[in-house]
Image (cartoon, rainbow, N blue to C red; front, side):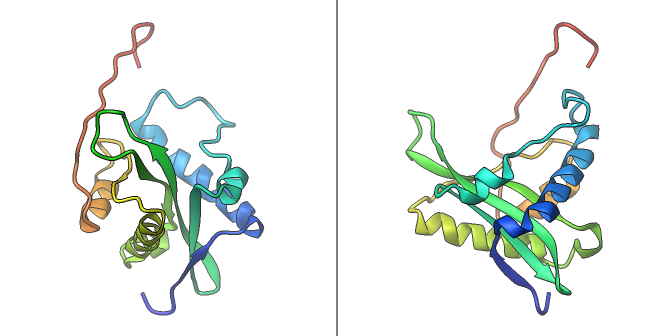
Length: 157
């Protein structure tokens, strides 16, 4: 997309980022019946922005923030061939800006940050039935790796 700027998020962006978070939660509810009723929050966005072991970025088009994403350093399991990895999250693009390569621009910026941290393994999670998100991540080179399964013993969900 022309005239797209991807930059590090700042605390001034918090109102928009908190609204994006609620849109993410709304979009994911149909895939996960275990998400608590509102009010609910996935992230401590202020801490994520301030944390030196994470990076939050936003994409700006038409003079407004239209997308976001984050990466943070996570410890790998002791038996893997890497000690730490970059975990991507908080991926959101406003509906009217989807399909324009903005998600790829966000991921590209986060991958640059990961390399600067000497991280060469990058992971993210996506709901199995969230086919549009899976397709978007596959376009950027991600491959399905692990399928998490669940069983709820005390109810029908």
